[in-house]
Image (cartoon, rainbow over all chains, first blue to last red; front, side):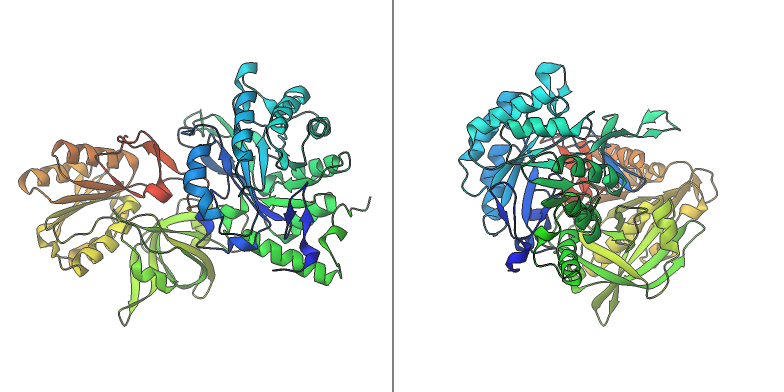
Length: 305
Length: 271
């Protein structure tokens, strides 16, 4: 156990350190168990789950881009029941808080998922992915409009008393107004950013590289966008903000804390170096020692402007 | 097809790194003792420490194990220079650190029951077949009744011919331009051989159109066949699910090269 100076509270969940794994980049946790000690993590956010299993998109699903990657996995997952029956018992063995990331195609699907997860004692909280298309609104993502975003969060809030983290889409005109809207709807914390929608074209074939045509950009390429949005949101909301976007090392994570994030999620870096989270935790520790900081809170929001 | 070796990540050291042909290189890397249990067909992922470009790890099949006093002390990778990562890899010199993660995935089924075998390799897909031939002969099966069909675009792509000769098997080579062996597809000598020597197993690794053609021939002749598939991949751990390939006939689900493969049964694979 690390000492108290590393603890953070993200809207009702105490983390032993501010470093979590981003949904979709860490499987259901077990995939990394051979390579790192899961007990050392601040939090694990498992792959996005839907009510029923989802087959995902046809291949090709990923392509590397300059300092990043573009993916259109299509949220392939085993569904909430298979997760509860096959994956959760393994995760119970660890002291690290487990968050389930959920997504739905309708508001009711989100609400039903929240009800089911509310029954699970071994789950610390929910992360709500609002970047998915709303089938009842012609496929426009819930997360790009204040009203739709708030409607999803309210419906989830009504069905669970567990801490609620809401993950914002960066593909919006004004991230601050969406953040305020989900805060008003009952979110306990806000995580941002999800991937930025992008596209790659194979010029020889004159075809999109990904079978899905478009995909989500992640990795170091999006870090400046993510930092800017975290900074904008953190100063406008009262609830904790969790920074995500191209965090590859401790310096990146520290920048997000300084911008106002209470904690961070590490995503694409897990693919490049499965030990990335552990290296980042150790690197934040060294930085704090060098800067004579007593607690991680001294970094959070400490930006000088 | 089985998988049991525990995965391991470490900073390996380059033992040597040398050109094989005009576009192919051979690199030796130190490895941990978990590779004692590595299976032919399994792969590793590499990353050049500190490099953001290229960003993602790259998968490479294990070409051979390097042994000293019967213990595995390293692995050999045979690689084609195709882009930024492999270009940088050619510049690695003895002693350089390389981030090595593996062994990953399942392996080819090796059995004493398979006495007559067809190995089919296309281009750099020939690489894992040498580890396979090593494992088969170490398992006590003589390959003298077997065949290796090696195909490529030009004679430069026909790798490891002399190594295969040392296994005392029949070798047939084909090239697109006729610069080595028969001009045409590697499946032509395979099909001819199959009709006169019914093999117990067909193993294939190479580009997708070749694998499809080999699988069709094996399925038509009702022969067991295992194919090893290469694809773009991010984590290699079953976390990102980016390496999905075609669906499985039985389950109807997408198969992922890193956790369901890279070796697949030709009968259950939908091309």
